[in-house]
Length: 624
Image (tube, rainbow, N blue to C red; front, side, top):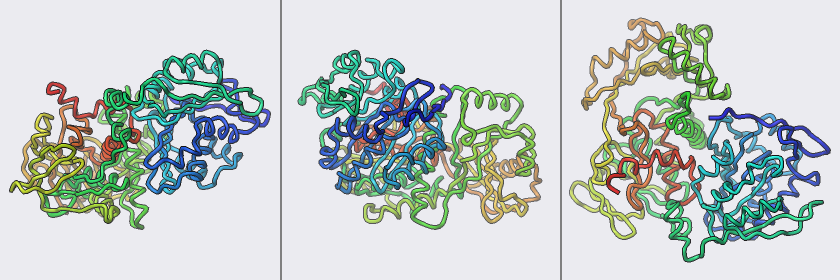
């Protein structure tokens, strides 16, 4: 993973200038005006936005300072009137601007204040990979991919309706204009995909034509003589479905115009509840089936669950998936909390304590190697832990200042409550059999009674054996947590992790957990309770006599063979969110978004390479 660099920008001759590339960000005649003429008119967006009745997906090869995005968002607001349509704007950027630069630069341009303020407010912590900024009132989703352009376009899993080819000139930044870039983008295009760019260099035109675009020159902006427009023409209309099914099967619904309307979600834990919420947000009718008498009755009924990322020196798959899940989970929690004054999540920070000198050194080396921003993670020394939190841990550890914990049961309950008339909840209803029919699925209970017919089904359950999941090799682990009263606990204490965790809860309560056992006994064990009690002594240095036991709770984890979630399509219109183990909260928002994208054809929230690593097909290859 390359360390992220930020651009050096100066004002030169009344326009913004990059000292890195020795080139301007836009014409001196106006950045917004150039965006309207070159990109918006070049892609006929005013007319096309009025005709959108589902979603419109646009890719920009260089986000820069955000002018093209804001201009496009403004046109979307002016021309799209359909209440259920979304603009998905996906932008690549290797050198993202900082929040301070954003605040200094954007007031120079006359865009709607609401758009500018939301962009500044939601500007992400600049770590590698995918970041999402939502404009819910405007029905706009901005996905910022912080990566090299070659890796970014190869990571896409979406269909492109319009392309903005923008960047510094080919002489100053040739990597942006290579034939390989255009070929990668062309793989996501259809016969109605258009492109626009200010660049008319002969090599660029030739590369685009070789990639399958018809291109032509039109009158340029301001003093520039020409600009370039084009349309994808490589695949005949009657071959579109075949081509997209072969290379990008998740967009078949998008291209065919079919929409999933009735969905069954099986399981009402954090995975099933957030899945239900995400589907209802797109206007689907969801039937939520739960075998118990209440939702979130298993592991999702625990008093608290940690929301934190993971760091590895090589930025491995677990680290990247969890980082993406961390951002999406916090975003979703904020969205759900906004509908109620009472908080359900707290972010005092999370410390991953080093167990020994070797681990402390490895943590330091990982931070140095990755170059992550301090507001995402830094190494906290033992002296700081002692002075700030009265925790005597001289080795220190990794500190995640934005992390914390959530009440998972409250999160589930509020998510379902916000679905209002879009969800029907079926408690005490076990689903034991699924039957595939042409174009739909039938669900049956243990009495072999049909529970309904659905366009799609999502399995958000544990390791219960259904015919369709039996080959995945899922296992179940036992976990016991203990809740204590600790009258002297520091209310500012961050979540402390070391072979388990300690969470300081409101009301002088302390949660310690969770054990790992293979036996499937629901009865609390004294040995597990003592293990949780000992954790208080080992992390805080407090004697067991300083706490009073309040509660012990047992729940079970569903675990995959490679310890990653199993998320994707098992069979046509049958989806799964399984194997979340101990990271159900931090992964479930991401998992739900992946499934929703598979159903709707909207852009995926993570890179294709990560998507493949989560797919259930990784365990089913021998059967395919």
